[in-house]
Structures are given as C-alpha cells and as structure tokens.
Image 1 (cartoon, rainbow over the protein chains, first blue to last red):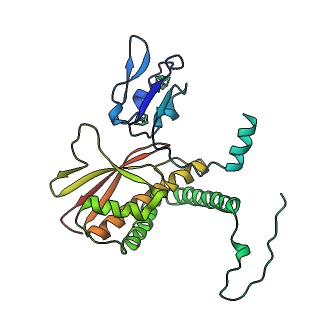
Image 2: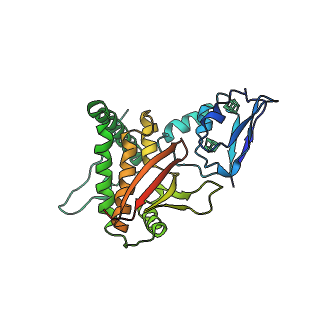
Length: 83
Length: 182
Ligand code: SF4
Ligand code: SF4
C-alpha cells in the first residue's frame, strides 16, 4: 500500500497539492501552515502533486512506477556521470 | 556523428540477420516515432481544432474493434476488461480502481454500468512527454477510442469513456457501458 512522506522542512504551505489532488488526499494543517495526508486510501499514485509542488516536499513509497521510455538512456547515462 | 553502414547479402524472402539492429537502434527508432506522433497530433489539432479528437477517437475505436475480434465474447464487464488487459499488455497496463468509500468496482445507474480504470503505463503519455505536449489532447483519444471499440466488440454493447484525471504516473478514466444495445 502506498505511503506518503511529507518533508515539513521543505513544504512552503502553498496549498497547491491540496487544490490539485483529484482525490482529496491532502488537507492544510492551518496551525503549522503545512500540508498533511488525510485520505491515503484514495491515493492512486498519479503523481500530479509531485508536478505541482514547488518544493518537491512529498515522497510516494511503494507505488507502481510508470515506464518512462521517453527518457533517453544516453542522456541518463551522461547525467549519471555528471551528477 | 558517424553513421555505421550495414552491408550484407539479400535474397528474396529472406531477412538478413544484419538488419536486426540492437537496443540503441530500437531506442532511436522509438524516439523518432514518438516525435513524429507528437508533431502529427499537434498539427492535426492546429488544422482541425477540436475535430482532431474525434478523428483520432474514431481511429482508435476502429483499432479496438479489430483487435477485439480475436477475443472471446462475454457479457461480463470485468472478464472483458481482463481480456483487454492481456491484449493491451505492459505498454498500456491498467487496473480497475474505486474510491475507498465504494464497495465494488462497478456501479449500476439504470441501464448503465460504470467502472473506473487507472492507466498506469501508457505509450501515449510517454509520447506526449517526449514531445512536450499536454495530456488530454488528440493522442489520448486514440486510447479512449481503442478501449471503447474493444469493449463494444467483446460485449456487443455501446460504450463511452471519460477522462477523470491525468497525471505523470497514472491517469484515471471512467468507462460507461449501456446495456440497451448499439
Ligand atoms: S499521487 Fe495523485 S492521488 Fe495521490 S496524493 Fe498525489 S495527486 Fe493525489
Ligand atoms: S504543494 Fe508542496 S509546498 Fe505546497 S503545500 Fe503541498 S507539499 Fe507544501
């Protein structure tokens, strides 16, 4: 089952993930001004929240990782050597 | 870049082994095809506007009908979807999905049955991302048409598919079938 970790140090409290998630997985913790996971069961691992989050503050664990054949292996190899 | 020329002997009806290519060749060809598909899709949209979706949808539907002719006919939606999953294979890997508050995958509304499908792997999505195009455009309609065509063929009913949500790792769609026939 999917697990979502929020890096509270990174989260800037913009609420974009709350707005964007189609299944209402997140809610704002008003006291902390950070997002929190309130509906994990309905997460379908679409990763839209990863694209919208300006702080890359969330991590989804134990999910199906879709194939990304559009990523050029040669580019990946070059990046691997640089980074 | 230096192009390595392949030379060999060719006889009628024989495919020389030199034409096989390796993984790099397949990867290059895949990327070229993705770029072609992406350019065709955006040009089609530019020329035909929203009509592009309908054209691509019809093309997909025809493909769906054709490929489902080999499948066993059934009136059971879940069985039909399992068969379609086998035909679509790993490149269009999908699973049935339901919100946690719903007890079964299918819901009945009058003569309609509704089921949500989560597409996890999708070559169309990869093509769009390769070419920097947004999801939900004409190319996505190829897969919608395919699913509808295939389910119509296998179950001999009328179907339609709607997009609930598109994401970089999975897309949720709603398949609705109507029992009252075509
Ligand atoms: S992966 Fe999708 S469903 Fe899950 S929390 Fe993110 S946006 Fe919501
Ligand atoms: S989108 Fe990112 S930064 Fe904004 S509230 Fe959500 S986790 Fe925090």
